[in-house]
Amino acid sequence: MHDALSTGLPTTQPLYKEVKLRLTRGLVEGVWKSGEVIPSESRLATRFAVSIGTIRKAIDELVAEQILVRQQGRGTFVATHTEDRTAFYFFHIAGKHEPRELPAHELLAFRRAKADPEAERALGLERGARVCVMRNVLTLSGKPVVLDDITIPAERFPGLDEAALRGREGTIYGLYEARYRINVVRIAERLSAVPAEADVATILGVKARAPVLFIRRIAYTYHDAPVELRKSWVNTEAHEYVSDLWKGAPR
Amino acid sequence: MHDALSTGLPTTQPLYKEVKLRLTRGLVEGVWKSGEVIPSESRLATRFAVSIGTIRKAIDELVAEQILVRQQGRGTFVATHTEDRTAFYFFHIAGKHEPRELPAHELLAFRRAKADPEAERALGLERGARVCVMRNVLTLSGKPVVLDDITIPAERFPGLDEAALRGREGTIYGLYEARYRINVVRIAERLSAVPAEADVATILGVKARAPVLFIRRIAYTYHDAPVELRKSWVNTEAHEYVSDLWKGAPR
DNA sequence: TTCGATTTGTTCGTATGTATT
DNA sequence: TAATACATACGAACAAATCGA
Image 1: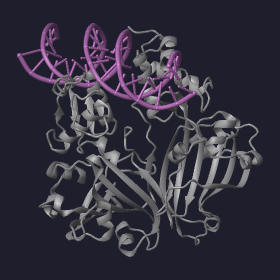
Image 2: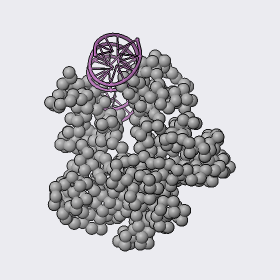
Image 3: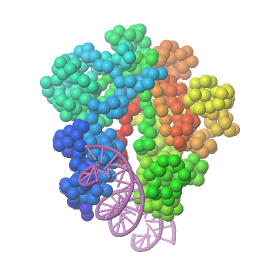
């Protein structure tokens, strides 16, 4: 029986899973914030009273999940949304011919409201919970390409307002992270083709009823907790959605 | 300097990368075929004259890339396309409400032709190379949902004909694998929304010019060699494209 | 059913290489 | 240059799953 850090769980899972869980817990609690280093492998090994190999295996998985980032000679860091690296991991629209590019944002609308049933389900909210709703246009090379309708639980984003959204630099997930210590680590998306409604068509500069790509995204933080529901409409005349089924291990 | 299995490469790469390369070479050459076991880790360790840990690290990456599959107590197997597991890895269409389901196939057309410029580029073919072109309808719960236009290099699929395509069981990639020992291990897709042309609309049972999802896929085998260009049109009235950005390490 | 051989999974430890500061 | 941190490689021991005798 290995119970160096037993937490009284019913089923004894591998030690490195325990370590992984404790590390994740540290991330949730903000012991180590985005962009910061976590303790060195040898330090963690002594602190958790396990071998350094066990630490490495736990960190391996968190690195594979893009939650941590290793840098030889420097240390292991909490992944942050203020790098192009992660930005492209969460932004999948690219020009059909041009090289990939990050979008510019413009806030069109912001309000607070009661969650509709769909948002309740997607975000796991109580009935009648309050949410923030915002609408953004994303432009690539100066042209509007994506329209985003974002819904987040108001409770987790206190004091969020138009000024904060406009004043930010970087992506919205960077704002979640910097201001609310909420780290988006995974997204799940469902795509379909729909005719553009009048308002969407106007904003994206396409004819009414023209085909646009519709994306329904749920963004998750640690422990698969949902934090954002996002609906997007994409003008795919000159751009497209990129789904490069993961090349697997580092090359 | 570690050169237990040095192959005279210019830059000395890690031993486990060498091992990985030699294993992949074995897969390419058909030393171990789909569904078969590869030698045990200890046997590989002695054969390659490296430690078992080095073998494990090489296999780890191939497992992460879904090229090999480990089974405790049994061995390590070459991944095959005759399992639901991998089928869903390469088929991304799901009902909006129903549980996920594998499609039934129907061959609409098959012919040989000269590759068009797009196929030449995508598949890295010589100018004027011959290709097989086929059109399939995929049905879910009896309803046509996806139309596939598939282009593959004729040279790599000798003797392929309608009978072989119709007579097969399982997916097309299963056929590539069983009959031609070509293993599709990765795909890259670009998605957009387009109006359905007349023929597409008829087959999918939607109005002409109605929005449909268009997918351009390139399928790769080992060493990132392209083997198939596929264009798909999807009726997304009751179905959608699933892009669950990889949960990362095994849970 | 039991047992033993085989194979992968987990954990430990150590030594050395390489990048960073 | 020295210290620190991750990366690679080796080896050993035991656990857990599988399979056939």
